[in-house]
Image (cartoon, rainbow over all chains, first blue to last red; front, side):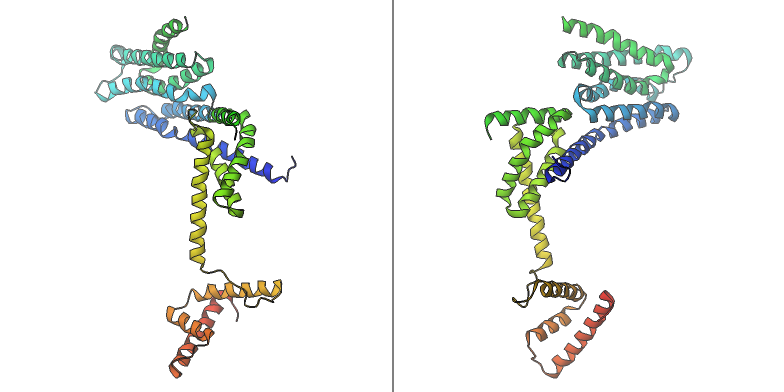
Length: 180
Length: 175
């Protein structure tokens, strides 16, 4: 087709409309991610750390959702799975528990591990529905890890590591059993 | 549309909804003729072409919302019908706002003369909008040749013309 063919122009416009539509759909997730960041800030998380986690989470979620495919479909399950890992340690902070030193090990760290275990179970269940697609699994795990890190960083690096350990401990057996 | 093409469109739209860009060209090739024919029947004429284009852009813009369980053609035609109705309403509203279309005073006028007259009429319409209803009515009556009321009408016409000239100068800069 020639460049001045009106059909080609219309096709280019339709293509642009399609891409803009996908971008618009992807941005619908943004309020939830910003809300998660705001919740972390409201619970006393330092803003540089919160921004350092929220912004990559926002970019990753919007980018994957815009691109589509198995990785794009994994964004919402990843955010949902990361919810408990985000909420549990933050809830500890709201009930007056101060996460310092040894006291952190008694409540916040276990909360991160439990939150991670719940997240792992959710992701494994979702991944089974998608035939254990590696792109789905990787994308959901990355989104969940960043979402959970917003809350579990309350216990420092140990909290994040504990959460990831919980994810692997609960998710791996479920995936292995489902694949058999 | 044959069942085979319908099923193919459904499959292609499903892939597009999932973000598979390679399905775009084939989906476009299947959809555009159907939407154009539908809008042409629904609206007709050049408006039909506009409605078809608007519908096509809307369908692709909302491709991400497409549910694979639904028939893609019915879904696209539903959007097209909505676009056609919207376009028709817009056109009707515009026609109502602009009033009756300008007509040539002289059927034997050349296209240039007709264009000049149309421009003049448009310029007069633009100024007339700034006048008071009574002035406008007086000018219309004078244009129709109705001179009832004698001196009172003459006086009113003088005043209306003076206000018209003033408004014309303000709008167009010269008489």
